[in-house]
Image (cartoon, rainbow, N blue to C red):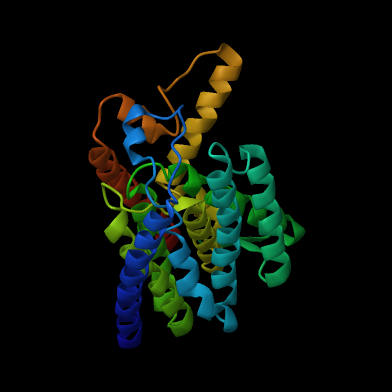
Length: 308
């Protein structure tokens, strides 16, 4: 445990140093976020804010690719992050859209399938309390749905300063606990290092953000959460454990469904954090309250998994 704490502290300070230098580099090169005109007007002041802060998550986990115990976790995080990086680069070039939404979902599916093939899980059980079901080949679509949903849901949540980063920190912290209880030292060290890098990122991403994680960050953290749900055999609770990511995704689904059906909008704008912005809530208030909701939902799902 002492080693985990020590290396986490080192990782935190490495993240602070790297991001400080990276922010200066991005500002010098004029590389910043493009704000779409369809978004809330309050966000126009964020135009030009340095992006790609999520690269630090990939850097921190890169050494863990070379250990069998941590390969799946590190590869899932980094590989999904690469997909997000491609999207970020295209967005910086096109100044409007990166990868189109439906194509992004398809690519996420393909990337998740590659992860599955390279890892090839041997445990096809779906655990629900004292019961388990051997899904056999049906485990494959569950695995893919989990990865596709979580990564894109985290990406949808990444719209306010600190919201996605802080929510992911909460989720990953809870998902670390089972690994600590099993005394999986190396994997616990990898997860703790990622948590430390998220804290380092949040130092600069807290309102008003000096840097934004970008899709490279959202997708890498989505891959990290998905892989830990699989490693902990918590797949049956992944919707509950998604917390605020689930609510953000549902809001988008409801908005699109009702608009196509009735040509009416249920919310002023989705994902739902924009709805509250347009109601006049301050960004910091939305983020703080969403943290609380996410913590309570994640805690509830975690306790349900333990005691059911």
